[in-house]
Image (tube, rainbow, N blue to C red):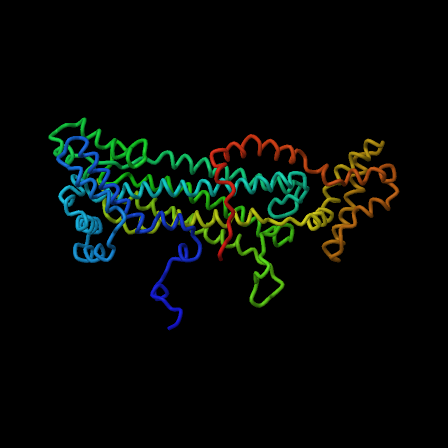
Length: 482
């Protein structure tokens, strides 16, 4: 059939087919995985040669010249025959490196390539996420600075509360994102290499290769660790590195998911109030049935995917808890899904959130109207203080305000009309001494406290310094294809 392809005849993960960036999709691709395996075999051979094992320059050169040309068809055939993915790729690599074939994977176990590659992918995954998170923070910081002084209704229990500012509310979002940045940086820096440890982590095979020379085994471990770009390796492992490493990694990503879900839920609530909207394309359709609708679909996508990201952390928790003794293989199939999907999902929600924060639209007149509806009630304490300063009695004034407030509330709730408390105050002779002060008493900017000053200090002391390491990555804009 015209336009149909084999890829449409089987399930494809929408994380890759619809949403994820090319760099994150590549990071967890088979191409990257298996070329990394070959690089690890090369590192091992180089280090073993440097430490005196009978490995030739020709063997090393042959391996170097065949890092990329993987015959995936042959590898699949080998795996079907051998039922072992690592040995299938050892044979496939050996086929194009006949001279080096005898020393490929020398002394190693499957986890030498499997676990070390996973650690490299986790590290590189963090290196993809952190600049994206920094860009979201940068865009949101600019938004907070722009609207630092714009009063808006605060909400507690999703009921109108004391005023804040649009910028101050954005700082609440920023604070969580800054915490996530530190969490991701810490998790990335805490990652170590599994290194060269052998079948149960004792390095026995390498000790035998080096005829009992413990120093050479330690040097081998360090050389390979350094070639892979790590500063440290885990000093003790079983056959695998501890699966608690996966817990620590996915926990910080799940925590990021919680942050993004909260931010995007807030945006959805504010969109319902028509105070703030995410960007809406010129030809975008909000509803197939209701053409007037402007649905917050990007924020909804973030919430949807963030739930998936938060749920994925249960996988490594359960996996680590059931790793018997030096290891069991019931971790493998689960990790093939949970580790890549966590990074792919985090990548998607950060790209989408960057797109949202680059185009957030604020409607000050709508915000002002909502303030007008609620502010007269909030200003009653200020009115009482002004009356007392003008010589009135606090208790008498309180009773007057209480009666007028209840009358105005009845108009709002029972008749659906606007709050007329201010008109009632102006019509009551009791308040004549302070009528000239009412405009000042009802100025929204007098109700926001130190919100603007808090925004300025927070951005200066806590946000901008976090962005310094990522300044060279700030100009990348996100255009969502879907």
